[in-house]
Length: 130
Image 1 (tube, helix red, strand yellow):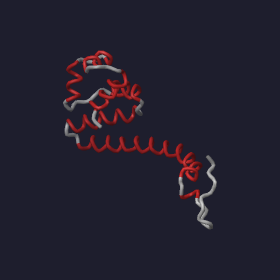
Image 2 (cartoon, rainbow, N blue to C red):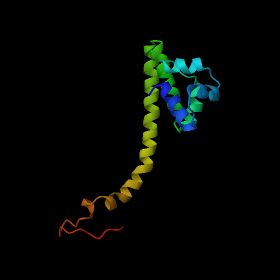
Image 3 (cartoon, rainbow, N blue to C red):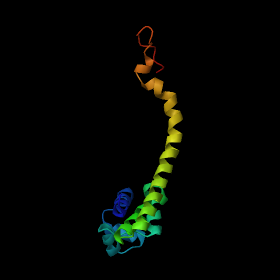
Image 4 (cartoon, helix red, strand yellow):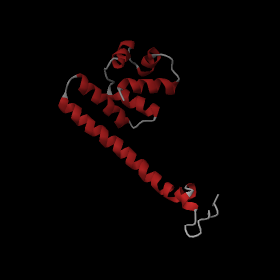
């Protein structure tokens, strides 16, 4: 994902029709949006604001922008730092989701799986709980 993808998601979420409308909402110029479209980055504040609107972890949006900034400036050390931070943020979000989802799936897996509802001794399908 690139910083302009964040702008596109923001535009869609807010129902805006143009980059100019996005620029006005965020207090930017059309030129600033155009720069992001062509490989530039967003400020931390704008990345954070956009993330809140599109339902993304703000730290992830900031990392996306910092990675783009490091790539553009050929800052290899900074690029590696922000890639590690991005992975940490996305992995922690996935872990939290997994911890929430696992108990639910463990509870319903036997109800959803047709193989789990077959009595292995008789080979007949057991009564469904549904």
